[in-house]
Image 1 (cartoon, rainbow, N blue to C red):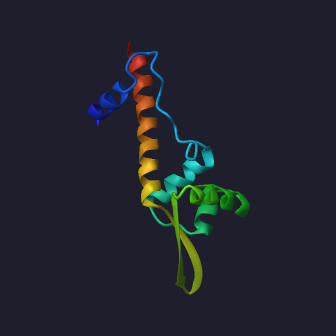
Image 2 (image 1 turned 30 degrees about the vertical axis):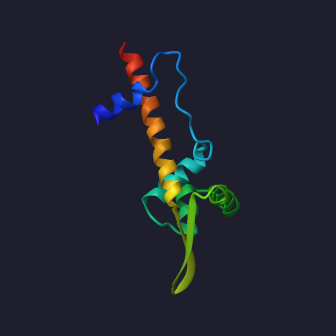
Length: 116
């Protein structure tokens, strides 16, 4: 893990190099938390709403943003009462991993700067 920090933090180069670009789709507090849940499994709308403590309308708006850029898959499950489960699409998973890598690089760079 230490090597990874050095490799990603090296992408900053010198202090005047710009930091990595953070994907605006993920870089919003509710959507960051939402994508963490979607990245770990296939939660239902009800589970997402409860975990995030947000309204139906708010959750729906965030799901639509992810869907609009092709980052979300949903499917209907009929297990007693029908419900929809969600997960990140392949492109959504890849983009979210890149977002997490950028955050990791920023944190590593901040730690390196503090050590100097």
